[in-house]
Image 1 (cartoon, rainbow, N blue to C red):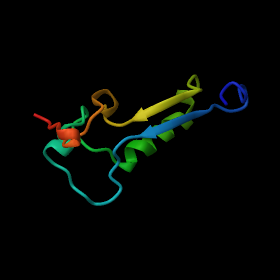
Image 2: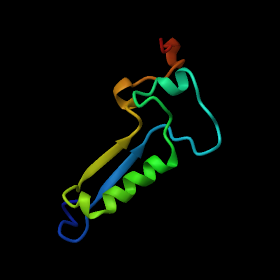
Image 3: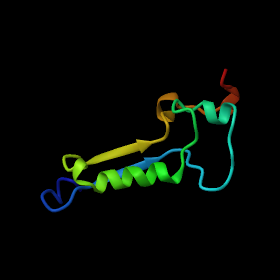
Image 4: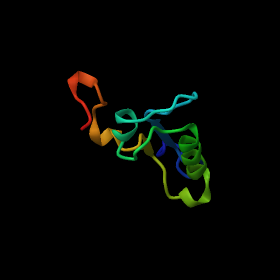
Amino acid sequence: MAVSFAGRVRVNSISPGWIETGDAEYSGADEYQHPAGRVGTPSDIANAVLFLCSDEAGFITGENLCIDGGMTRLMIYHNDFGWTLK
């Protein structure tokens, strides 16, 4: 799509990770297993959207921004398949 719409609009996407949209509080492994050290919030996603819509991101197109606190690199969550954060 970025190629098809080149010169007219920029096309990017966001892939959010674990984003807490309620009032839950996390601690211990649920929080610290994220390389960022916390669970994400809606404002983390909103700030990325605002950035991608800004002039500062004018050279970014055809990209997917993964916003998951680094969990894509870890690839497993605490208590999945018997794995625990130590």
